[in-house]
Length: 140
Length: 475
Image (cartoon, rainbow over all chains, first blue to last red; front, side, top):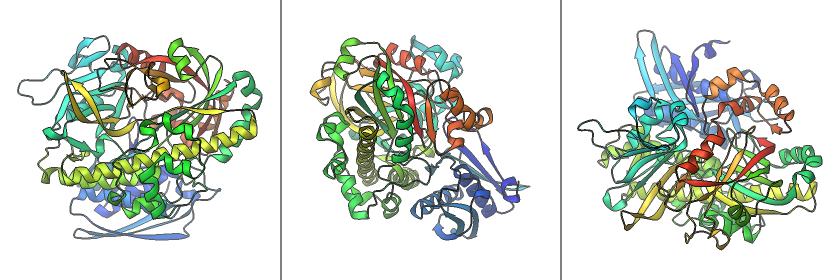
């Protein structure tokens, strides 16, 4: 298990899947949540990094920022026919700039389950003494 | 679910008593005692939230297959009056707008299918794009996607996908009014570029099934069903376009609600008054996605027919019916003796018009609307018929309903072993995803027989036929 996989986890939801990302910074937690979500679709170790996509958005609400980040990644992945394995995100005030790295789908990638979208269900972005935790249910 | 918090109104209808001072509408949960006690506590929480929304007419309701969703529970039904401040909710429709089932009856019987089943499974798996990351042969630009959104299944038919007779057996004859492509983002259109004629993933499937049991001979005759007959069911929705519309409006309506004076008990209900600009925008976009889903299932029907024609050349596949189960539709219902124009949300619930309803094709006028309860790939599905005096704005169950999380299912089953076990029971699975197969293990679902029986006992829809899966293409 790599460092990124240690920082993400899942929680129970009967029909869909709950994703959790943790990190020292808010953006680290968002990055880990993205890794959790994309690992549902394909194992990260099965992917190459032949594609990079930049994502920019502005959102003042931290919880909605998580949902926006995850959904923008899903949309960009679909538009590019791609799947991502590594993520970067920087925050300045309400503005976020991120990057996702991965590859286009090909027959060598074992398929997981498609994620349709990140929802507002069980949505929370919290900070405690150990760092940040970001979670929500994603619809599959 | 803790039954001590519920009051039974009948064997299959329960309510949640209001505490003193609690301001909300009535709640009705349709299910038998066993289904309810196995149901997630979150269903209760979520339907209580729905009961607090403005403009709700009658009760907020759940169907026998209900389970924890997002916004509304899956299996949630709620009708709103636009003239009473009623709302439309993106969380009440979901991401997979107009997800539904197209059921095709064939002129084949099990004896004819059996020797060709493996070949049919392989060819269907080759021809039907299924699974995450898979695209179809059809590539569309934004202007063409606008046409899909405006014309629905008619768009597909005009391009040679399907037969003209299909349209009369699709809800709204294959094209819902009120679609407004201007309310759909460019990103949503881009996402749909290669997704027409694709099945998707998760609980979506294409199944070849056999009618194993007839419950109602008269209705079965109207539906053209008999024991031993082969049918095909296609379960999928509006693909990336619907997912992106859901995404766009879930956040924008969550933000708009407070600005528009709508108190949300939970912001996942993301809604706006139907008569507001925001409500109308979502309605236009959602209707556009419904048409996209209807076109998608029309294309998949065509691809299925092509495969059958190749493997079983004398086969004939006719559309029995096409029902959507993630929608909000404007309908007229009689409430306390008065006809009212309402917006009925069905989130994981099927419309079930009664016999005689004007929207039904002539062939089904006497029997009632075909209702399809899709089961798991190892158990079976049901065809039912709409009943008079349905107590839930002409709604019924849509599936077996999950009883176990995907995470728990992954711990318990392995895809390859499961597929081998089902093959031992003459059920052939073809899938891109071993993970997906494990998540969709039949044991992760409720007892579909119990769901169908409770649906009938509650007066929602009566059982007509039970379908046993023989071939299942999973995403």
